[in-house]
Length: 469
Image (cartoon, rainbow, N blue to C red; front, side, top):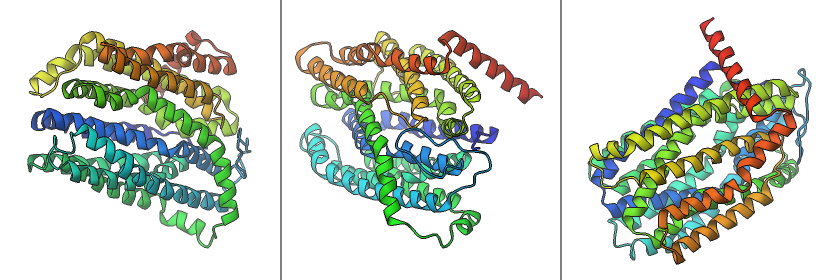
């Protein structure tokens, strides 16, 4: 059984601290030392990186879950549902090795596809938003380094699935910490050396290699290498595994594409219609709210292997209680973080001497509420996926189309601008996803939302008492 230890939780939060620090420590320098055009390009590049991230097409969570199933004793993998195993079943190392090779095979090809798309369509977009690569110094170099960084980040992405799937949560977080430390140190140094946005891009590229090196060291330890020594890759089995994974990966890929349209496509379109000041302001709001979401959902994301393992063992009672606890933590931390952002955020940026301001308090409150409900229903949807089922494909695609279309109409034909973009996302999601997937989980496990909150509170009290004991 792969369960989350106290050390895993601690390292998860430390990793999130450094993930946040990589933005928080560098953000004031970026906002103070870069021009508005560079700040805007920085957020547009982030949007493009998020967009090409869709080419993962749902493989990352699929690999992570299925590797967890194998380490939990599963002897076969299904397209739909999971094999409930007895406690005495061991690990099928031939299946595991074939799964690892399948992951490497898939991600190498995705990485080359990323380069192809960025070098063509991506270059056109960057040329367009930088006025022919003239509005930002070193725009060509910045873009070239960004393409290389995306390639290596994609190719090495499967290592995260390997570590998390094996239950090496602490080790995965340490790898993330080391790479972020390198990124922070290099980015700050390069910014003060006057390299500007190019320095940030180079730092991201180097940190990708650091992450891969540390992950490899932790996953392929001597004990594990001895267990898989001499096992040959079964190419036919690799093809079979790919087809099995692709069944749900393609569904999740379309879901992620829809999620991008819902959450990130607005700033991509904004680059074509709004001025640099508004884009920079919206980008800062998205980044800070993203930090709040990351902190709030850290425990939940760290528990994903545990959810999959509990599904495999059939222990639904413990599954629900652990899930309720993790979601209660999300509620408390997000509400606290959003309050701090709305009340103190503008003043903090002013004290930092930033060359950008946050949107109005009304826009920040509305956007925070929308992101809160998005995170809530995403948590419930993720629990559904741990049962190796993806029932929300059609609704996600429809929502993504409506949001993307609504964003375009707002920007191209109305004067509502930023507030209009935000409201489109909120209204579409409130119409279905915000309530549907919580309701599905409540129905499956036979509880209502208020009893769910009580379960989370009871579990929190239980854990506090165990710590004090």
